[in-house]
Image 1 (cartoon, rainbow over the protein chains, first blue to last red):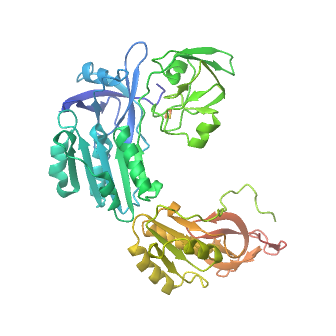
Image 2: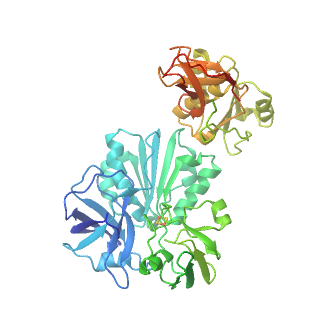
Image 3: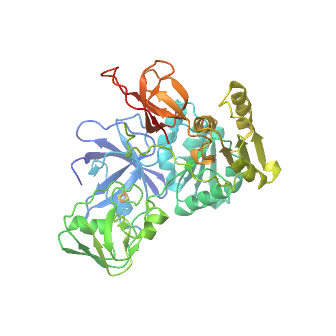
Length: 316
Length: 174
Ligand code: FES
């Protein structure tokens, strides 16, 4: 990680739902910076052959620079970051994180904020809430979870927010009627969604159908990099060829080969890692490029996207 | 004096299209382009507000405040008139909780520009030539292509600050 990484010590670990653990992080050197609600950090965990690097939303009060808190849902299918956090990280351990970056900030011009959380997607909103309350903003939280696995913080939220908090335990058969909820919102409402892809896709579809302005629909859609087929990438400037195996992302393979690519979220949303492609077909897996840019086929987001064929030539 | 071609903030006006998913369509101003769109929609989905020839008057603003208050989240606003007027409407709509993409403007009805003086912050309406004397402070202003969305106006900067006797040739604005 680059020089602006921050060394932290894990000062507390709490199981906040059967599958979600909360970690309290303290700065080892000096103090943390305050952050804006919706910010995330990328946590680097030591591992072989290379560190795990996962983005997590900060859930502590943004004005509290004494500690940062994150919550990690155990993803058995994942590439190991969440398993590492759950099984290997102990109180007192050291980790490094990036400074907070925000791709999911509230729009303070909104007349009303409608927060939709799915499972561990509650985390960015934990940081929204204190700020929404301080500003006296109009808001509602709708929280969808599975009682036996997710649903962290729900009692606390219900107690603190009362009528502004709506809980839906899918295992108890409680459904959030998205169509109705979104149809009855007043002019000036902004909706924020953080949760599984299906929830985000569902809300985007419904709001579009209902005639919502797209700029009032906000979502946080980190794509965890998924495995794929191995391929080779040729670096046009040096003529080098780098192999990318099925379990490794293009960004990681480049880093392993000591090729520097700017990056921030490592999840296909921030746009930092965009790299020019000179030839070869691309399997786009990011949320950043527009349909037109994908069509053009001359850019790739190496943190999540891959070659669809055997070989790519990139402008590095 | 040439207007800097690198300045890209001058607004472009694409043809107005109906936002088909909108529940209410508000038409403001008079113009053939709006008439045609208005006629293409069921009456009960439309609101029509005339005016705009004299800009955003107090009476029109009061009327529009009431109308905006009745609009649902899924609304669309279509406006025609002078450029400055259309941006006034857009700013009013934004203040009422609408989004930029919900407000569509026709091609400005005239080439006249509203000019914002960067020295005294006052507005001069109906500007057709550059340089132009500021109606408030009397400075001679170069009319730039740089557009302030907030003021719905082009930015004017004093052209002969060094030497008041240096009066450049007047050019017609396009
Ligand atoms: S690092 Fe953010 S899109 Fe790749």
